[in-house]
Picture (spheres, helix red, strand yellow):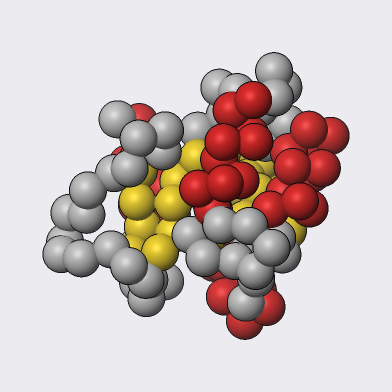
Length: 127
């Protein structure tokens, strides 16, 4: 019996650290659940989010040229991205259940566990 092909969902990963960006891309692509779009700063993230309409955005908190918080404000000001769930990725998170800043769907602490990252994203998006 043929196995049903899972529909891939688009996710935009935004991080100024190329190694982190590539690692997250590999992890999420290998899960076969996500089609991964990448951006290295907030400005690029806005362009990609407008044109590609991802179903979710993983956004680094600290980036040169504009923080994740500033980028979130700009995403919320755009009609095309206003409702897109945005998950904050940050090394500033403390504890196993970090507080979620207003406007974000959730927080993933860095360093993250590559094994559980896809499930963390699913859990945040389903809540």
